[in-house]
Length: 314
Image (cartoon, rainbow, N blue to C red; front, side):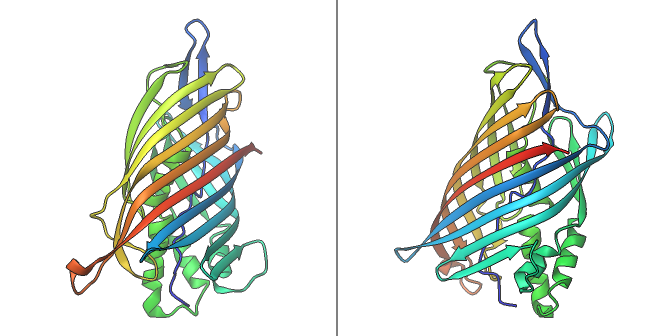
């Protein structure tokens, strides 16, 4: 199997939206996530990420397009949190750079290495523990899925399997997934929120992007039929952390930028009906020279990503 030359950054999941109880006398909203055991939801995601690397004055573009369908089932609820069972039903992926491309369609009978790799991800179950304010407490079961994915491509050399698993963990592992969820799922404060009210929260995430995210939430509209929220976030990676930049090449990610989110919530069901996210980041990928740190290669990069999610209560 050839080394990975593309970096896939998924926003692979989206989960229950905000249950909002309206206090008609004060026009305030008590926001929280409400879960009912046995409920099932289908989440459709479409996203496109374009990365532009400046290689000696020549801009090289890498495009990753993703369409994914996920089924979520609420399996357990208590006063503090809920357990959600997640399963990917379908993954379509197109990654292209220069004259090279990778196509994945897990609904097809394609037998190429990448299709078999991601097809092994579908139908597998993992769990997410989520608090009623939107914080993800834990994610379990992904490592065994990664083992199944690697087993689906036995032609991968034994010496490459550990590198492949580390790649999967950094891109799709629990820490990376928590960071993605924090941009898809609003965080809710303990106090009631008035119309045009704002609140903030901070998050540090691991994965390919080891980053600090400062979120600035606002309730822009609300009644008993619909609630609209926005998020204006500042995103800053930690350049001291070492990650796999592709093909086993180690390095650092030094990026800063903004993330904008719009959320439409259905108060009657307690789930969002739609979420739209736009991100623009700029900085450097720093490729490590293992023999001489003073000769590390700094490559300017900018990243533009758009993602949309649609939710359906089954």
